Image (cartoon, rainbow, N blue to C red; front, side):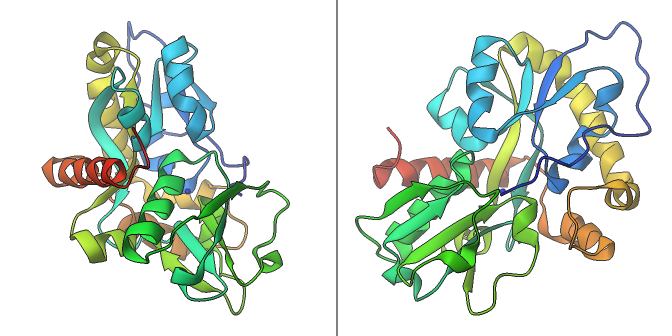
Length: 272
């Protein structure tokens, strides 16, 4: 979906453009975002922003566009989705998971990094709707210092981002949230999409974001070789993760999955 803040946001092989308005772009410091931002730093100012702060930054004008959690669009419908790619999955995603000490249905407390709106809500939905967990306590913790092995039998831990790519602690069960979603719905899951503060900016940036994604996906070897955010994940595994686990498309089937997620969250009373 703690996720370290060491990941680079500078990219190589930029596309040189003339008369381009430099925009303030919010990005997340994760490996899976790197192909979508390939070359953008040449013409735009990229800033690392916590996922749960993206919507406020867009609405306040401190960002023009952002690779924001999909839930931000549910809660802030005035934000404009730019259909130029997404961070999603059509099965196991590896980097968004719940670690458990017992059967999932026995979970009473979920320890989370609450900077991730989408992952927290997906966790709550899956535990409630598919595992029958009621009266779940969601407790934010500092994932920079927290260790999953500290948990009690009735506690589970939500991990997202680069830290979820390393091996789980011995003895803990792993629930891959995108895999569970696909198992029960048959739909892709969308974690994040490009959003803009208004339609004019969305229209202006569409082609540039399309181009960045297309080029980024051609340079996965360079991305994983130069990436500094994962210290225990083999480079070959990192490249396979981007190729096989992350779905960068944002088409009709991804929108169907997105719409179903919003519908189920409302039915379960998890969002207004």
